[in-house]
Length: 188
Ligand code: GAR
Image 1 (cartoon, rainbow, N blue to C red):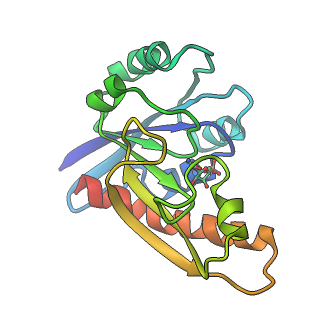
Image 2: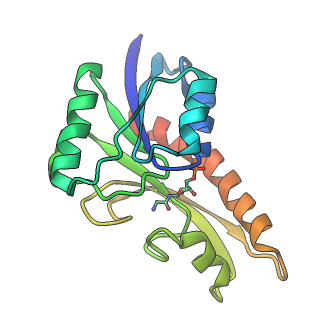
């Protein structure tokens, strides 16, 4: 049996983080055990920190206003003791430096059919667009925002007259389905 060590970076609510942890942590897939070692929040008031306490995942806060390079050096310092195989971004609202990306295989989830609707407002932009479908993407992280090779995507049909809240919930539910599968696809 081999073990794959994961780290999660987040900035806010942490619902993807919690979903991933509950579905994958300490579980074995094809003779490979998944071990979430640590989470790091870029915001000290993120609700995800409370989720980490509740589920028993060690969490550190790195909310420095440093530039990208200095911030990422601190991230690398925090991660260095854990022998991390994969870094998972789950609502981490910072762009990572080349130095970080060269050090760790890093993947991200984004709530749109990339390359459409990059950035922090993807769900609303996708909701307001005239497209008939919406979706989510999982991709390797590059040094450009919400870019990098795609790992998986999935879509939902838009429903005429649907409220934004209901649309958001359907997008998040799709994220909870696709992200654990994409992680296993990368690791196995
Ligand atoms: C998720 O919808 C994720 O796809 C998005 O942030 C949300 C975090 O929610 N990420 C991005 O927009 C990346 N550009 P969560 O904190 O509840 O998991």
